[in-house]
Length: 501
Image (tube, rainbow, N blue to C red):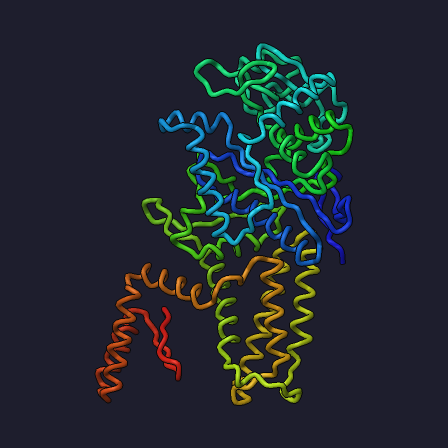
């Protein structure tokens, strides 16, 4: 089945059909870099990362562009508060954003344009709108005239009578007073003498929020995008305004498909700083494996709200996140299964058809169902259920190998590996080294319970020496002491490992 996506513009689920067969041009609105990435940023990035991965794994070429807004009033305000040059603050948070997204297993975009590097392109687009009668200058500002674009409101399904002054976002009272229509929005904002500004035909200033994305996306992907994505909160005014200014300038559709992901909520309320329920990705990296955060983001359909529950102590302090705990257990199960498969020694993998099991068709079918789930409007929860089918089949395969004196048919082993490859290619899960992930999860849990992993390793060496000296009472005493602290030892021919009970 070919990919079908819910198109916000039509309100329907439609086949995704790029203008150029087998080449998708995708643009997603990136961050305004004045602070660290929050969980809403993380969710949006993970959703579109899965989309790009799925398309590429399905054989399609993808050019993925995600911008960075590094010139904005919020950046200027934060820089002034901190006594830091705006460009330095923006560069610092851009680096942090990129680092955080990579830790969440997201691919880098093919192009990551910055506003600061596209002033000429932005000014040219504004001039094109002014020359075409779609924009007007007013006291150093330039505004888009929504009345010049009859289809204004077609994405958000609003009409001009419903729109209020200031609804176009990021305007002060003086700017609102200079507009011809309450819904007109700024393309260029004049700068005061003490504010950063750049030259333009209308005087020193800086671009408006909406025009930046239109200019950057068209500069790198052409006048019509195959897909434009972002959070649900961007439908209006940001994406509505992008459509108006872009199509007024070019006369052609700006994007064929509009895709929007839902909010991250905390206790059924939208996550926000003002409500005190705001978490950055970095807030959670010390508590959970980043891949567990990614896994949790896949457990709910991308268009639905993602509600985050927490536990509180008597003083109202956050003490835990049960959903991330569960997601981390699922990630641990994934990597534990991968390690179990790969721990079978090469000499026990045999070219013996008699040892083949039903695993091959089962694994192939589960992988096919995973791809089909993603083809159906990127249904990631169903895709995760198919991952569970793969893990059950692989563990049954390993159980069977143990019953057959540890031997496994090469075809079965290869089918399991292919299924793990599909999981990584389409969902971005299971791409790390199992031993490292499992060690990090184990050590983090140990430290949370007051157990020093290095001390455990030293006690294991102490026990090893006692056993070598045939002092089994001392060896048992070490085991019992560790068990009393929640540490379970696992002996094998390869040595002793440990886990938390």
